[in-house]
Image 1 (cartoon, rainbow, N blue to C red):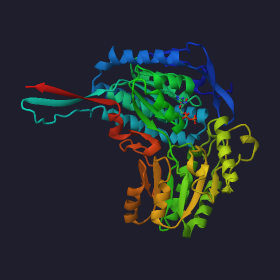
Image 2: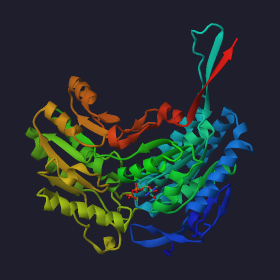
Image 3: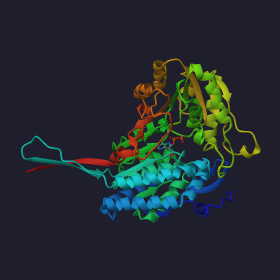
Image 4: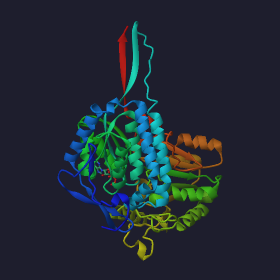
Length: 491
Ligand code: ADP
């Protein structure tokens, strides 16, 4: 065990959080939490499985139907979310450091994300007061009809490792705003912040059983949650391959599903753009969090007249990014999350080279002893990439960028849309007509013009095509957690 002094790691052997209590996995198994910066173990986790998921779902069902939670008014749910937001704000440094230790993102970014997460919780606090039905006029004589919104019930959520605190807040916020209950299964590679956040929620006054966290492996604990007959809704964020398994597993009780499954997002640079702003943005659209971002702009289309100069500017920006201690304030790039992910990313680099793409920079580990034990990958840029190569079509989830020249607007729209995914898309141009035309033609849930990866709690985010079902953030996110009941009264 490495000797890191963090308040949550003073007891490094973590339990499951079920029914408001910390409990060991029924089978007694444990797994390691590894710091990807040096490969050292920083904690051990309870390895929950189907039996623990059963216990957590039973606790969530009990809390949904009995006890204080169903009697919480919207004002009380709002107050609860505001207290959680205040506590998170007060402990932001501790959460930021924990995420850095657990999954490698430099603290500059884990710290930088927390104001948005606090804002998100305050948004959901406000949203708790906005839930309302309607009174549609019927054309039936003497008939009154009203719609009411009710919590959808027991929710399950399975989250990835690229933003453990972020994903926890995103799943817990709407559950609390709508009066649902939750069983959360964090990623096995990054479970610590979800556990610490569940603890914070309890301290803020979330009643026992409303939020439960079962750490464990995907194919056991995750699969059991997705298949559970007493879970009313599943929310999954992760790879499209696992998303397909979740869809199949959920068929038993036809539970409601929302899915956010990543992408292969196009980022288009027109020659008329502000290129000085576009080049660093294009680099960071893929290299931030070492490429472990669902909407990363991994396919960069550059108008041919500026292609070579733009590639040079992107490579120069990438080359100036600093690897280092994730806890130091000026580190730009951390490791990828695990040895498995490291091998996977380097495997894609090999596939790109073998397929005939030109490796312009990166593709290997950064030099120096400091990086020998960690799962680091240099920012990697490929040119001369064919549209049908694996590195152009599959989500890599690592710092790997493919750059393509293009000649016309119609051509680039067609090629940008030629992907099974549709999560994000970006474009840089000074031509407002083109921004509307191309923005309208791109098949993606979010299109960013002269910016990339902008997020706001009020603005929906989600995928077209194989990037998923449903929307998170904004009013749609709340609706995913509500049932509509029509009430008819013969007057
Ligand atoms: P990766 O393979 O890169 O870890 P995944 O999409 O498989 O990406 O992981 C995201 C989340 O899905 C994790 O919490 C993981 O434990 C979970 N998971 C993996 N396999 C399954 C499965 N068969 N059923 C349910 N959840 C799973």
